[in-house]
Image 1 (cartoon, rainbow, N blue to C red):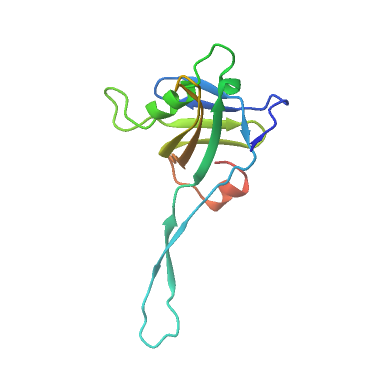
Image 2 (cartoon, rainbow, N blue to C red):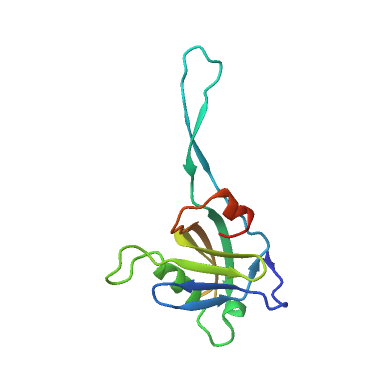
Length: 160
């Protein structure tokens, strides 16, 4: 189920390598974030437990965001493959670059997130009588691109 877009709030995606910008005229009902904290377990003979040694915090992830795409999404006369093509292009490197492009996702009043696509699943779900795809879902996993060290104070202040 996709959220109501009547309010005009949309997710915007920006490709940092090509400056391509695409507005996704749908809002998911749920947007999850995931962070893993990594520890090493020390084995100490005679202790009844394993002390934990902090190693670091993994990059923040958006583990799964799904966009439902059909002709209503694309608009009259538009190609419904536009979002698919944008996302697929962001999974490979541009000519002369090392690695896929960073993508900034902006969901107004909720989140701004810059990262890379680590997983993309396209499911073609509806077909016209001529066999043409008329609807699909794109499920994307993003992992944050973190250019500098962060501290707990940055997170407390919402600077991330």
